[in-house]
Length: 278
Image (cartoon, rainbow, N blue to C red; front, top):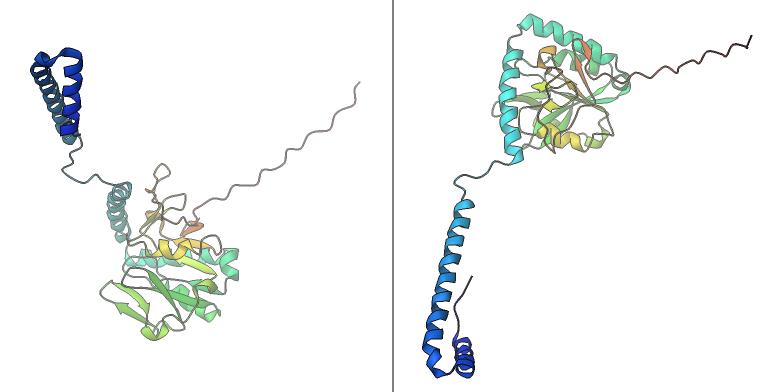
């Protein structure tokens, strides 16, 4: 705030003082005016410093998304450790049970093209399921990552010839020859891996957001299912932190069966007939 007076303003003040108070009062009035302006400047400078001190930020304030990322990272470490506790034979048996439960779903049964991942590490095994899908005549689509973490797809016909391990990002992807040979809009069913799910279908992945961005356009048009072991499911009183870009699963299949329970149709209440009087 600039409290200074220019020459024209000072001249007007002096003329007004001369008219109303006479020439003798000019020096005194000028001194009082100067003192008043000085006090105002001191006050405004003090206020300015206090405002600057209040609004001073040494570190950037964490955004909502940053807080979610921190919470997700902590949950991710917990559930990765739980999954690793399963032995190889346990994972194989549970993966087989998950596959049998998935085949019972009517939407999956009628889907002619399925987006499926090829497992790494302690993930739910999908290789046996992929071989069976190929044998049954389903078209199997496998994702791959671009440099910006967006996701592309490629149709495969052989696990031996059409899949390669990408050591940089540590996943199995279609070979270069098998990429971009299938339209995303022709996918009829999506299977998503995850680190964890909550009971409402919220998904926790590896943190790159590839599946969320990819499935956002498909959600509502094709079924989007999660695949996980029971040990990857959060408790009934726990919820995954949710960000605006996260995509909820339509269903999650574990070795125990479907996770998300559909509301049971209420049975219409039968009103007993009225008994005749008497």
